[in-house]
Image 1 (spheres, helix red, strand yellow):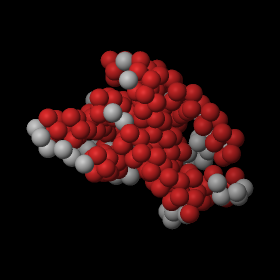
Image 2: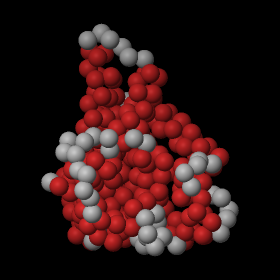
Image 3: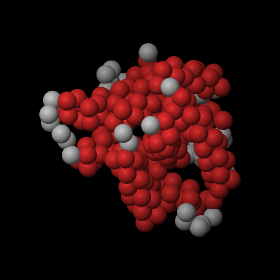
Image 4: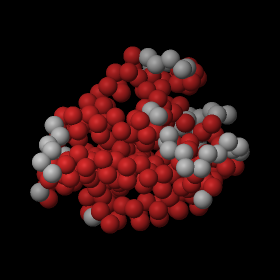
Length: 254
């Protein structure tokens, strides 16, 4: 349970048991619990979506869809403290800077956000918001539950299967101390969380897995490996991808 609480405290602003003394080994061991952290977040997202889009309307209180979309868009940022958003913007700044590999890594480490990062994040938010508005409420609840679970499972895959780009850094602890056992356990936990939600959830998992391999290989070719910022960017992109699969799938199955 210690690994789970460390992962929960690191990846979210939810602190059930406050941990102050962390070692690099603790960070590495916490990786296997990332899908469970995603399940906690997913339960929060799904509960809020159910209240806004299903429960309150049955009581005669119709929440404007645009307003509920904004609230559901802000909720992940609030519960994660914008951790992955920061990594996404840093990654976009570095990767699309057109500089050398070393300079790209320096740009990603800079605390300032550039035009590439801001523009990419705004576009990602707009896409996310559009999907939330178009998603039928019946599918929105399960989509929001499995979204963070799959996203964090793919982060585990990236950590355990691809090299780390820097000689040191916070993400280095994950890469060094999270072995293949962490990956298989993460897959198992993800399957337990995803399988009950049906074929669309399974399809979202498979699509995310393919995307993760392609994206991680591309970034490895550009940077020589992955970084903590890339882990965050990958998580955020996979979450939007999961929602997109549910939206497109809901149009097919009705």
